[in-house]
Length: 253
Image (cartoon, rainbow, N blue to C red; front, side, top):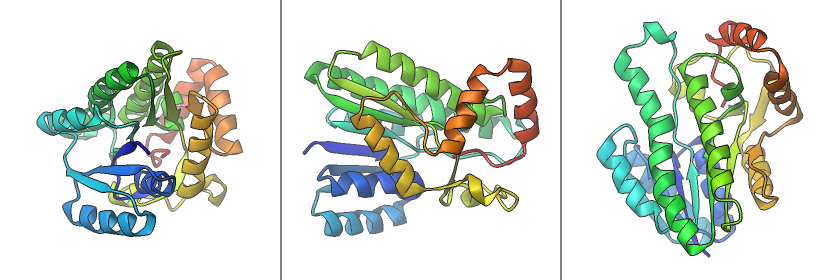
């Protein structure tokens, strides 16, 4: 079984991808900026699934670290670009450095690592790229939404470029998922309706099923499928209004 690289692999959706891909027999390359968690997660996955687990400590807002990850990605058969974070404030209230770091992790790292892995996969005639975006990518809700919109468009374009090459590209667009994401970003989720929440195992399971079916866009759950459809056909002035209303709400991921 081929190796699977997962960025942001020590918590949340990334950790769930590691579990489910490990259960399928993939050797794992775990990328995270959390040194302490990497060791514990690596030991757990290796013991549970009997697969080789390689760990790479990296900060994807640092260009040299991204280049190291890109070099390693050339030899994997599955790439999951999952690493990400959110910001608490309006765009103009955040420091520019924080906004630039957000784009570096959510967009630039996805571009660089996908370019390296995608070329190698195309040359081999096989491979899978999964980019984790968000249903927030279809609304106008600040920098996070803008970044995830880029990931969606980028993934669709790359999927078209790699059509008939043996390489598939799927972009995962979840809504609110029960993970540490919001807590670690310092974002309150107390007012979010219980009906909107998804569990990480289901999100990843549905995504991998969509990958198997060759789907380019994977949106888990009927509520978010409906919201994604509405946001894509609604007049943009309504989408902008909705984005303004949700700018202080938790990023949908």
